[in-house]
Image (cartoon, rainbow, N blue to C red; front, side):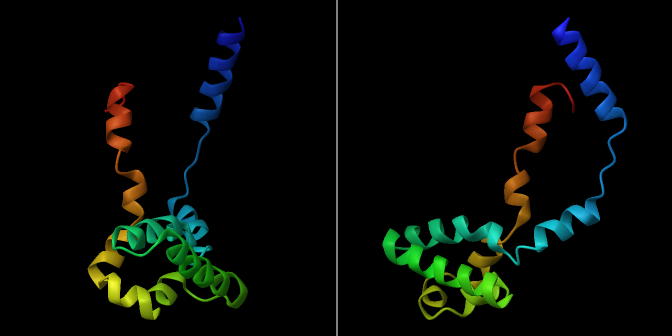
Amino acid sequence: MALDYSLDLFNGVMKGLRVYSDRMQENMEITRGLVFSQRVLLALIEKGISREDAYKIVQGCSKVTWDEHKDFRELVRTHPTVSTKLSGGDLDGIFDYNYYARHVDEVFARIGLN
């Protein structure tokens, strides 16, 4: 009975679900690119920067982003150390929202929603 109730409740939520993709994009942009900070950190480590130094760089740029409302990507791009390690193409790949949705089709196929 609990499963039936849960499925009925879920069905009601899904039938009434409205997705506002423009608003979703706005909400992601509120962070001014900070959602990509982990990817920047890992990319810097892959390029040979120590984890501690990479963390300091990302943390410093993140703090400026929050405190001064500046764009994280621009801060990273113009950082003297980062600019020698990551190209514009590297940064384009890092700051790509599609990275986070890359397995959506596979997941939907697994549950039969293709």
